[in-house]
Image (cartoon, rainbow, N blue to C red; front, side):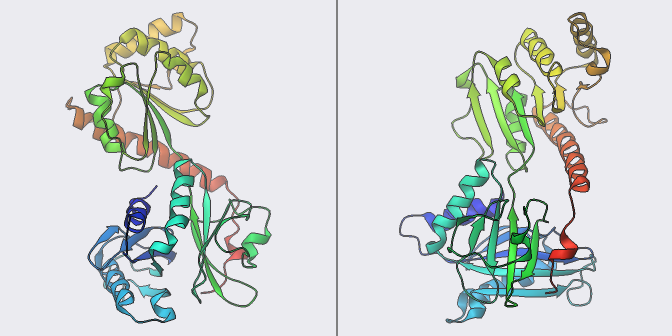
Length: 362
């Protein structure tokens, strides 16, 4: 869930709100670019939220967006698709070509973007359909191409005639049967899910770092008073006397990080995690000596040695030895990003590629 969406919904859903913004989307990248297709930023007359990569490209995009905000009634103030050659035109070392889609957003679209925000927070994928050659209100569909929100009739696009749009890239520009261009923008729910056990100083520091990263966190502790009053949007706190039950109920592909205030509880949770399937990553806070003690005790309880090898302890990037909570948090967050990005690359490689038959020349 990107900052662009949180910022946009805040801007257009406030009582008596009259703010108009331009949503800028990286629609397509040829060669090397500063951000991936689907990256977005929101531009208002006085502010900017999120980023499409910085540099001269972003500077030009902000300029164009604010020109659109100042324009009189016309199609060019509502929607645009513009090509930028990064090397020759903008002097950026990426050297590729980036196509940016510009979309005017007013408070009238508050329900649409709030609906999208609720779906992402519920871990549900959505695909936005935005007309680029007229001001038709954008639609929203699910992975089967079924309309969720917006105009009643979806355009006839190659992608929507396939059994599923789940295998499509993050962002595509397609042409319908009448030659009109449409932005098919995948707004995919954040996949990495971490179950973090322990609300002490280190746990709190890790939550603060992960609050700005593409992941979801379930933060568990027996002591409800340990949780702060305000949490990042991607974090859910759960106070429970039976944390082992949360381990059993976690979906396949989840990651687990154990750092409670009680070594006996750490050991019970570790055994529970190592005895279940579908664990993407398991980390246990502690020293090498703690690992040796836990390995011995867990092996006595029937955990196989090859399974114990999956337990990451000590946690964090090798070479970072600081024990301050903020240092540990930065190191562990980097380690988790490495794990999650590797998983994402493996899934992307395994997914069918439909781009060649779907993408029409812009």
